[in-house]
Each structure stands twice: as structure tokens, then as C-alpha cells.
Length: 62
Image (cartoon, rainbow, N blue to C red; front, top):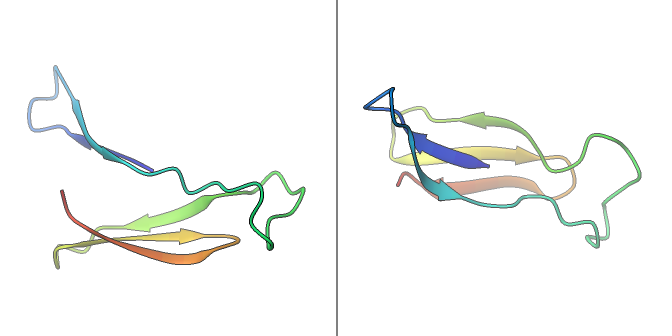
């Protein structure tokens, strides 16, 4: 997951990142679909990320 500040579209700036893929996690598979598959930023101060093998991650907004 990578989060960018695009307040100035001409020069977006990365403000946060998190690697959700963990090939050694017990529930990882050989599937092409690994790591984060969905993300939502509803404006409640949190970022919700769904990961196929590790479930739901909840991060504070940067």
C-alpha cells in the first residue's frame, strides 16, 4: 500500500507505505492474488486495507 499527497497534482508526494505481502505467512498461497486487494479511506481518521491472507489492516490516516 502506498499513500500519496496529491494536493499539488504536478508533484505528488508519498506520505506513507506498508508492504502487505508476506510470502512466508501460513495462509499465503501460490495464487497470483497476494497481498492487499482493497482499500477504503472513509474520512473517519483510518485507512482500511483488506489482505487476502492476513485479513484486515487498520491504519491511522497520515
